[in-house]
Length: 364
Ligand code: F6R
Image (tube, rainbow, N blue to C red; front, side, top):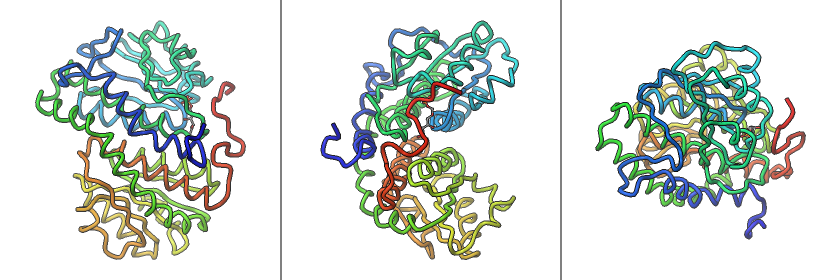
């Protein structure tokens, strides 16, 4: 049932405020000042290292979470693609918690990576959507993301629910370790509670993106740039676009631009720049100007202050609500998804069942 939407993907994008709200409520303590893990006993005080492993979009959720665990909780984090991790046979030191992220809970490489960690890691955690999956069953602790069934092959609501749960887990780790001030933690948790209404407001940018997507549909190559928390999101935006519109898209950390990819820039290559007005904004804007100086067409996705300061001379600007930088990946995922969706619709591809892809990759 597509609930009045043209595609399951559109329905699942629109559901995000609701399902994220449910995930936040599930992990929030009654008084709203802490994080609880219902039915699980976990203390991050003695954790020396977190090793996160996943594939595809779930891998990008892990890359995002690395910033949170390191910056909020001070835990060193390693993130790897499951198919690389499992065959590299990396040493797992004592004090390591291994964390596997998977929507389906059945991805063959992720499951194999989990089994490799059995008996080596102190604890095996998973963040899954399908609660009765193999990965959930074989973990010491399985944390559900509560996104509900995801039918569109391209992951949308599962990604943002993974981010939400990972952020809350990072906040719990920060509290366990005394790495965050109580007021700061309560503030972030209350912003998480308010997130559904900000996400609803964000979904209103759809008409802006629809027009832009029609123009993007003519491109052969598209670049995505981001810094900090926006870098993994740039990767996710490029993946989403490739998967459903079949347009070649690449993402780079903005600072890497001049180390090679800048050679690709000309007037035919749209460059999507994800840059809320955060601490790294000036840097992102100076990278963006390097693109424009070479006739690159920039699509800037930012907030009001960002548009005011950096919007001069750009090809298109999409303006989103302002948000605490810590929560920005969850919000900026929405325009990335909508851009891919409307580009695919403009191209007339099979959005829910893109060619060559399967929802659950149970063979390696
Ligand atoms: C992208 C996508 C895939 C999955 C990947 C892992 O839109 O859906 O990249 O994220 O195949 O799948 P799970 O999360 O089921 O392990």
